[in-house]
Image 1 (tube, rainbow, N blue to C red):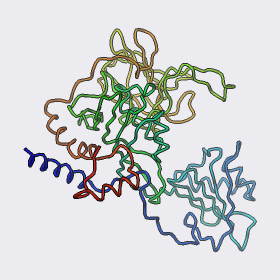
Image 2 (image 1 turned 60 degrees about the horizontal axis):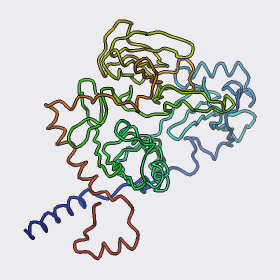
Image 3 (image 1 turned 90 degrees about the vertical axis):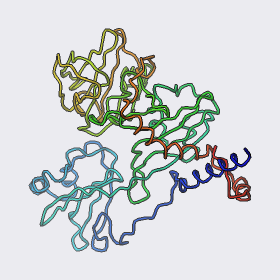
Image 4 (image 1 turned 90 degrees about the horizontal axis):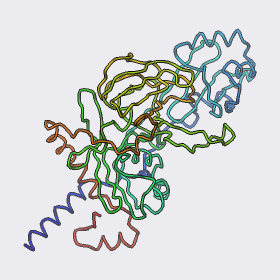
Length: 429
């Protein structure tokens, strides 16, 4: 019996050690080597650089006119870059650069708009006019994170040096099973996720969670990403027993959900003098044109346009539940049409009263608009029997990795003690 215990211990040890080095949000990355005299691909030895930010009322034309380029030339430039670079919408506070030839600094030769780290636009303003969008190459990195809750999940992420946005992704995964407004001190989590980087060092956002473990009130709950409907490409999360973590409705109307604003009846908005402006929907951020999915089977009872809602669709699922999807770029369904869970009913847009591309998801129960994440809804269907074996095989490496991630980063003293142990054995919990 003693030999059996020793054998199992060694197997566990080697399975954890074989998972490789733990990646964290502070992983060292090799910086991209660039020529010291280049900025946005333009030789600074030949140009004088002037940088500024977009102010209220600024347009591409006004900026150029203020810098010595008259309107007829602005028109020619706009015609030359049409369909190549979009300068119609410049965001207030974002940066732009003007490059002046050192032999003639009366008018700029290049205009560069760089609103974010993932790319920029370059426009040549003299002689051969042209424009191009430059998208920086990105790299997807699989990372691991863990922590023990002291006050809130967000603060735990911050103190651990983890990308705080992981908070929202993790809360979405467990939205139906964990009340994140009632976390207990001592609750703990482990997560495996992917994050995108440009220049091998600058994060441009978390992609998604691949696997997670959350322990709430002493109850452990695994979550594994899995394509539950290959035909429609629906991605969902299931526990280690292949039970869905959601309810009869999809957790959100997008294939990969990211909540940007939750249902909140006490929401205050500074723009309206900090007055209470209830938000009875849940906003899911996504790029324009992202497919919007029906969260459950139902019949289209409205497919229309209003000034506030923009293009929207309302589905009636049964005598109890109805859902609505706002700000669509375009609708795909018509009134009277029956749709199934996961069917595309439109695409994310910016129609109606909205400051950015997203879908506002509204949920009714017995005629009353409610927060869908706080409803006791019937369980969703489990993974189909023909996919269960595939799921069981899929989660093996992820469960092994999760089980081997420590909840807290060891101190230097703990590392020294562990190094003195036979075979470098470490406690995987």
